[in-house]
Amino acid sequence: MLRFIFQFCTAFVVFLFSFLAAWYEGSAILDRPSEWGTSTPISQLMGGYVKESSDILQWDFFVYAAKYRPTFPMIMTVSGLYLLLLVGNALFKRVRKWYAYYLFLISVALFSLSYFSYEASTDGGQKMFVLFAACGTIILLTGLITFLTATIRIKRMKTE
Image (cartoon, rainbow, N blue to C red):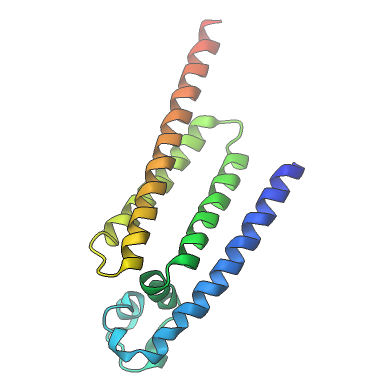
């Protein structure tokens, strides 16, 4: 239990720091009207065309940071995934098949994010695509191994 708390707190601090750093770096979009058309998909989805900086939602700061300064968004993604895996492992410790399904769900989300960043025109967007695809693949393989291990264990218990 102590190891879980230490890992959770460490990952949470890293996530929080990278979240704040990415948010700060992404706020540079407010001073770049030429980017408002291509780097504000959430604002455009929620409220239409962005005409002034006050129309930009805070979440678009992360889109801009991921496109042009991807270091902190990448760290935030990895530490956030680690938190999800850690919590999922603790929640589904007794029923490993459910943990495998949880991992499959996370990998689907990551592959979806990689799909949306596939044709990124910026270097940062391409790096985010690779990160999403690589993490999705690793988590999918982990889920498959977990599922197969749980299935074999259940079959062994039935035959004994």
